[in-house]
Structures are given as structure tokens and as C-alpha cells.
Image (tube, rainbow, N blue to C red; front, side):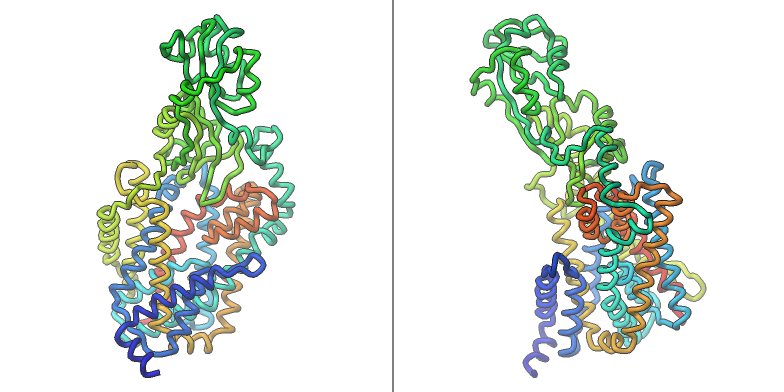
Length: 562
């Protein structure tokens, strides 16, 4: 035991990394498809390891770790957050605000009724509303109050205790509420409503669940005979399915395939588009030919493109095609991904900033379309470290500012400042794709390391006091946590469906987004036997991340008694 204490004193970072490693492994374990997640597991492991002795970490380490996490959250949500401030997505924004406001009122009511200290109230907020970043913003606000070291340490321990007791329960309740309780409150059959929505997205036609017409894209070569004398535009219109004449070779020379170009007998052409349409084109054009050289010189491509054009936000795919116009000629949408989940495709499917379009077509055509949509995601992109570091520095500087409400100094703290900086930097990146690169893989890494390290430091540093707080207030926190989790979602469901008239399937996805538990969408998709609930996640998730995070300093200001 003496050896362990010596290691704790001389190299506490070993236990910090150990807590991250063990907590992450435990968080991946699923029982009947359910897992409690890495964040809660890291905190629990850290609190248990914290019983071995007194861990001390420099405040600057926790500040940097939390800043990395919250800046990344802001960067990822920035384009969607600012774009959500529009009429097209107003209902989803209101839903996120309603859930946040209801949760805040309940926490303050409990804090007043049961005389909860500030740390416990903040921990209850973070856990029951399933937003880990509240721990950091509340801790930052407490640090601005000029408390003694012992008092501050106890308050931070109470935050950890409140979070540890209520987060797992809040997470589970959210996973169950979205697919099972919300549909009952709306008195709808989620599966039947999803089928209706799929039909609407398909413009009234039967829904194409696998989008085969998009996936079976290729190019083939033909020699003109039946189509001699007809224009490119006439041929493309007759074949349909957005098939285009990509190349014309006449007597060994390339001819520009303009729409008014007339085809001559013996011309060799290349058609690109869905396989079924191209194969059926033979009677219209002429014989298919084996022209490897002709096809080789027309490189095809499949590219993931991040949607960053603000004009496309909230528009249907049909409207997007009209806005992009001729730049979309010869380009096909194979998939639309939102927060890592594929969205059902149809003419009425809405597109939001931050979505990823998988485009198929020739290299030249895709490059032309990409310029109108956003920028291509490239695995070789490197993080712009200067942009990242400068952005966080400015955010931390903004977090130093404060103003007083009575005797309490209200401040965003470093975490809140980093969040705002992340939002702005993410928005700037969407407007100027050449600056501030932070690839998705790097975002996930920074987020995981930042949050995991911060939570581990909190758990280890306050393990003994947190365990005592859990023993003292555990059952009370459980009861309050259930209420603070369920009531906001209940109110949000009723407001969304009966007042805002949101589609019930979209409402289920929006609830998961507003609670920032995007995993709850999986359950809704399983019950609906459709991916349509994903349609409601993006905007409430972006708004929810911001709204719930800033509750930390608000709870501190409203509950602290000097």
C-alpha cells in the first residue's frame, strides 16, 4: 500500500490514464444491446480508484482537457447552431429550449425545497439532463467565487457525486422514453407514422429503402446509330433517370457534349448514370461497344462532401438540386449521413449544415457540384493547430469576463468561453473551408481525450469526498434525477406535437437530440423499422449542447449563498 501511495504522490497521471482506459473498456460493454457509455464508467472507475488516496492534479491540466472537449463540441455544432436560427427549423429550436428551461426550473425548485448546496444542484443538472459539460462550466463558475480551497474541493466533489448518481439513470430513461413513452404520449404508432413519412419524402411514390438506383451507378460506351441526328438533350430526356452524355468522340476527336450538340452516325459516346437506365438505353442509341480506352479516360469517383452552403440548410433534396442547378448535372446522391447515421433519401428529405453527402459521378462533375455544396472530406486532411490553439485561447480569455448579480459574479468561465469560441470557429470554417481544418477523426479524438481526462481528474481528485456525498444523498438524488429527466422530455413531447405540430417521428429524433443522447435515436429507428427519426436529431442536438452547457453557471448563480 505504501508503494501505491508513493505512486499517487509522484505520478498521479498514471492513475488518470488507467481510469480512462478501464472506464472506456467498460463503457463499450453491451448487455442486450445496452451500454451506459464511457463517460459514466470513467467517472465511476475514477471515484473508486480515488479511495486509494489523495490525488492532486494541477488546475491547468483540467482546464486544458475540458477546453479541448467543449471547444470541439462547439466546433462540431457551430454551423448547425447558427443556421438553426431560421424559420425552417424554429420548431426544433423551441423544443430544445423548452427542455432546457424545464430542466433548469425543476433543479432550482429542488435546490430550494431540499436546501441543496450549489455543487449538488449542478451535479444533478449535469447527470439528469445527460450533459457532462455542465460539470466543467459549473466548476469554472465556482472557481470565480473566491471560495477557500477546502470549500471549493467539497463543492466539486458534490458535483461529481450528483452526476455519478443521476447520469446513468438519466441516460437509461432517455433511451427508453424516446422510442416507447413519447409515441404513447402522442397517441401514435411510430412504425405506421414512419411509413407515412417515408412516402412523403419520396413525393408520394413507394419509399425506396435501399436506394439501389443511386448505388448502381456506372459508365458505359455506345456507338450512335438509332440516335443519329438527335441532340444530347433529347437523348438524355428520353433515357431519363438523370443519365447524361458524359463524352462524345467523333472520328477520333473529342466533341464538347453540350445539350444542343447533335449526334452523328458512328459517334462513340459515354453514358453515366444508374445502371438500369443505361442498360435500357441501347434501343434509343445504338450498340454498346467495348471501349476500355474511352472509359479509362473518364475517371469516376465516390466522394463524401460536408454540407456547408448556408443556402442549402433546411431545404429538401429536390430544392437542393434546383439551387445547385447545372452544377449537379451528372452527379448522383448515393447516401446522406447525419451524425454518423444514414438518412432515408427522397425528394422531400431535408438537408442541414453538417450533413455528409456521398456523391457519385465523374471526377470533373463531382468537383463542380462539391464547390456548390461544401468541401470534400479528405482522410489526409491535417488539423490546423494554430487555428485550434488560437480559438481556445480567445475563448478562455472571454471566459474570464464576469458581471455580478447581487453578490454572485456570473461568468461563463473557461469552459463556457471555449464553447462559444468553438461555435464561432466552426461557423467560420463553414463559411471559409480553406481555414481552420479539424477533421472528424481529430474532433472525436480531442473530444474523447478531453472529456475522459477531465472526468477522470475530477473523480480521482474528489473520490473520497464524492463517495461520502453519494452515501449521504444517494436515494434523494435518484428520486430528483428521475423527475428532472422525465418531466422535461414529457413537456417537450407535448409542446412539440400538440403546439408546434411537429411530425411525431421527427419529434422522437428531436427529443434525443435535445437531450444530447443521440444513441436514443437507434431505439426509435428500431421501433419504427425506419431511419426517419434521424431527420430530427441535428438541430436540437446543436442547440441542446449549447443550452444545457450554459446551465452550469446559471445554476451556480441561482443557488450559491455566500
